[in-house]
Image 1 (tube, rainbow, N blue to C red):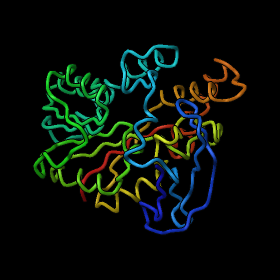
Image 2 (tube, helix red, strand yellow):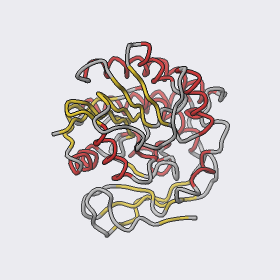
Image 3 (cartoon, one colour):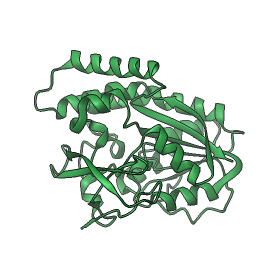
Image 4 (cartoon, helix red, strand yellow):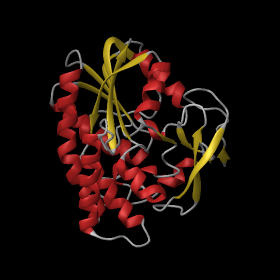
Length: 295
């Protein structure tokens, strides 16, 4: 079943315009509309599969964030990038959090970041809706990982809460953010990584931009709309940081999705151009990390 979002999750206005039609090139090959709020420019997949129906769009042996055994060139590239970015993520966590204390990784996937943070001295909790990924994460950290249920935690429980390429998948966007803010200590940090719809590679690839990833990605954030959304929940963005390897990984996928991909040199060129553009234009990298705290 499909559902239509009638009001903008960011500004609550009700007028949208169509921006692009994007094909799900990894699972269903169905086409979905990317719409843009006329008032605040927030972009979303609309209409979209409802919560009960979205699961089948994740049913792929190649969906590496849910399956560490996935093979192939693209998945090997993902794993190489993950090796380096996991360590950077833990370093960022240690630098920005008020203390090495309790961490919740919401949408922890197969648990690689969770295990690295645990090895670094953090008391970790993970939540993951996908059963296979949840089982793997539980084995990796040596303790049970829960599903999406946030009500099991007491208010003000966590020094840090992380969402690594997760928020764009969450149907109940505002309700989830409200719950996460409730769980965050007064001096805690909320760290969110999402693709950037204002990046060079997003404009370059248009409907073939792999980070649209419809219909699994329900929302498509820019720095402006993310800042506005977090402000709605009384959160202030302290830092915005790049994930520069994402430009190359997204370009690799996007070239695959193009009818006439131009090969490895084009992947390297576009990734380099995207990062160079970002360095010169207000940090508009392919993916961005937002470090936020309560006002």
